[in-house]
Image 1 (cartoon, one colour):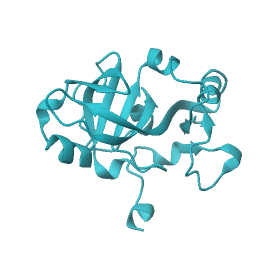
Image 2 (cartoon, rainbow, N blue to C red; image 1 turned 45 degrees about the vertical axis):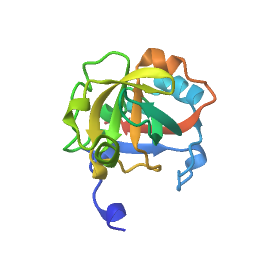
Image 3 (cartoon, rainbow, N blue to C red; image 1 turned 180 degrees about the vertical axis):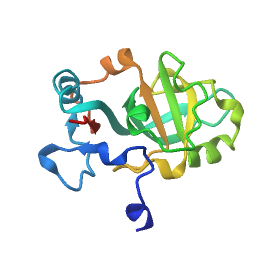
Image 4 (cartoon, rainbow, N blue to C red; image 1 turned 180 degrees about the horizontal axis):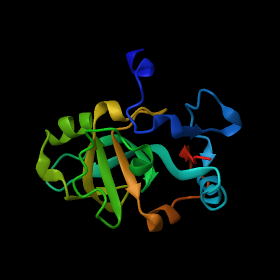
Length: 178
C-alpha cells in the first residue's frame, strides 16, 4: 500500500503514461506487440516526446566464474531508463557510453547474485544467448511498473530489430507538452 500511495520515483512523473490496449486500467499483462511500438515511434511524435518498450521474460545470465542465475528479465528498448528518468540513486557505470546490449540489475539481484560487487560493472555477461555489459543497478524503489524484474536488458536499435514483431510487452511514454 505504501508503494502505491507514495509519489513515483521518476522526474516529472505526471508526464509519464503506461500505454495499454483498450485502456486496460490494470495493465498487468503485456499486451502491446513490438510491431505496434515500432509504428508508434514513427507516427506519434506530436503526442509523445519519448516512447520506450519493455517485455518481461525469464532468462539465464552467465558471468564467467560465477553462478548462472535464472532471473526475471525485461528486454527493453535502450531508452527505457532515459524515458523513466529515475529521480536518484541509479548507479549507471557505463550505462550511456556502451554500444550493444546493456544489463541493469535490480538492487536485490545485485546483492543476492553478485554480493554487491562494484567490480562487475563493465563486465560482459551472456543473456539470452547474446553478450551484454553490466551497466548499472536500479534501486529497489525505482522500478514501479506492472511487472517485477531482476534485470533490464537494454537493447540497442540493432538488438531491437532482431526481436520478433509479435513479442508482447508494455509501452511507457512521456506526454509532449502542448
